[in-house]
Length: 219
Ligand SMILES: NC(=O)c1ccc[n+]([C@@H]2O[C@H](COP(=O)([O-])OP(=O)(O)OC[C@H]3O[C@@H](n4cnc5c(N)ncnc54)[C@H](O)[C@@H]3O)[C@@H](O)[C@H]2O)c1
Image 1 (cartoon, rainbow, N blue to C red):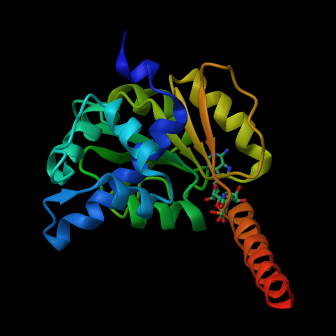
Image 2 (cartoon, helix red, strand yellow; image 1 turned 180 degrees about the horizontal axis):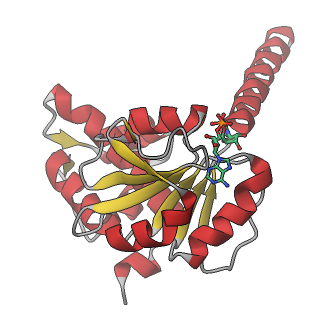
Image 3 (cartoon, rainbow, N blue to C red; image 1 turned 180 degrees about the vertical axis):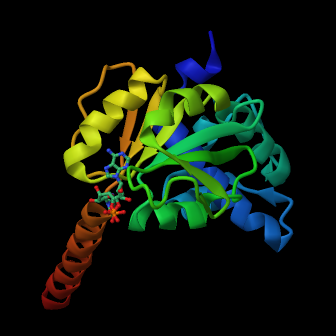
């Protein structure tokens, strides 16, 4: 069975997190990491970490743990395309600019190759090195670069129409920043990003831990 297909979505999410942690450990000159340490940094359990890493077919050394470079390579083998993978961005407003400035050049094997915006003032520009095209050129540009993943950073009112156009042009996966539920065929992967919801959650837990501490102090 194809390992990439059989691996559960949550495992993929955790493996992405482990990779971020491992990349933070590298500059410290760390050769090995134990499942317990990875679990603490990922806020999970060491049993979960061991299961996830076992699903990669990689095993560490009982005496030392996992070799950081080898584990990164195993995770990369599962998550990354064999060659450079190009991504598109639609909507180069405030958020789109911030995403380009952060993401361009950060990951050599996953690169934002093309941006699209309805604003004629942006079309033809290279923004943080990424060319910005007219939405009308989407089909040709996406096909030229073989792009199957897109980031959506347009206003909510236009997100559904743009998403449908992206899918019609061959996009299989969308990272959606627009605050709207996209209605797309089931075989299209959509990941919704919502900083406000995350902030609300963080504020909720701040209040809850404060309430817990107050209750403990009273008991
Ligand atoms: N998820 C989050 O955490 C988060 C955070 C900030 C913003 N947002 C959302 O991201 C989106 C963008 O926010 P922003 O602040 O950058 O807005 P913005 O108005 O600065 O930028 C939107 C850009 O989209 C372009 N655009 C509009 N319609 C288009 C179309 N049909 N095709 C191509 N381009 C089009 C506009 O020309 C503009 O450049 C909004 O939906 C906003 O609510 C989400």
